[in-house]
Image 1 (tube, one colour):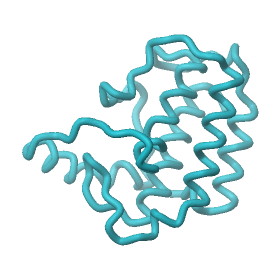
Image 2 (cartoon, one colour; image 1 turned 60 degrees about the vertical axis):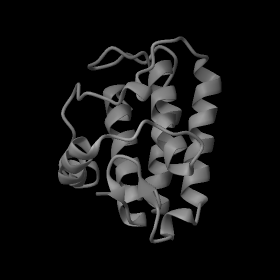
Image 3 (cartoon, helix red, strand yellow; image 1 turned 135 degrees about the vertical axis):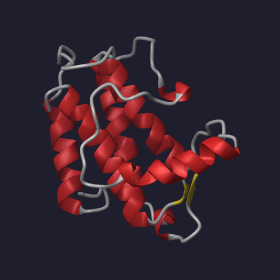
Length: 150
C-alpha cells in the first residue's frame, strides 16, 4: 500500500484531486463531490489533533483493533462502507474552497513529524505507526477519488 508520506504517492493524490471538478459524478454512494472533499478532510483533521470524535466503548474498541489492518493493507475497500457519524456530510459546500482546504490539510499531514512519534494514537484503532497513518490516509483518499473517477 502506498503512503501519504511517500513523495510520489503524495503528489499522485494531489494530481488526482486536481482532476476533479464540481460536476464530477459519484460512481457509488450518496455524497456529492463537494461533500466528499469535506469528508476526506475529517480523518486528516483528527490525525492532526484539529478535531475529535467520540471514543468507542471497550467492546467496539476491541473490534476496531481487530479490523484495523483493513485501514492500511493492500486490499481495496468495498463501495458503500459505513462511516463514523462525525464524518457523514450532508450540507452543501463550495467546491473550490473545499478542494483548497483538502490539499492544504494533505500538505500539513505530509509535512508533520508528529506521526513519527511512537505514541501517536488513533481514537478508534489505538497506536498507529507513521507507516500505518500514511497508508490509511492514502487508502481513504484513494477510495474516494476512485469513487469520483479521479
